[in-house]
Figure 1 (spheres, rainbow, N blue to C red):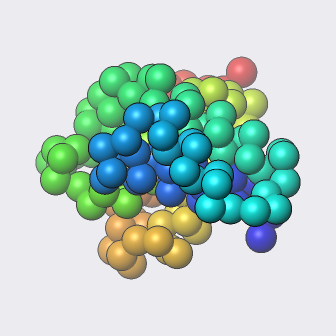
Figure 2: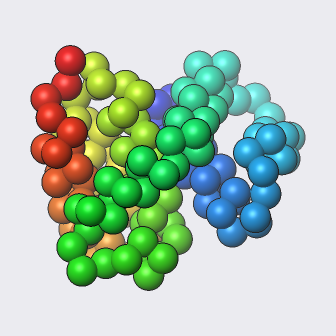
Length: 138
């Protein structure tokens, strides 16, 4: 597994920890990285950046997800799915040069690992719609 994929997984796990544990971003970062040894600086940096953007722009990100998740309220989504979406949309917003199909595919692979099988299609649809709404990268 590449370091980018691992970073995306770390970002998801930190977002999940922040939401479920009702912890501040600083508490999450501290406890999350204390439990992991030998993480490459690049992987940690990218994960921290995605987590930061997802937290700092949470209102905007949640609004985009809500708008494009037809017939689904954010609070009714599975917590893992909600946070996979948040991390991917954060990457759309903060890394516009990364091709959207790559971001979506990575989110789907992470969903296959951490979420229910039926979530993959849902996540794909929401991210595809959000990506189109944001417009062409660059």
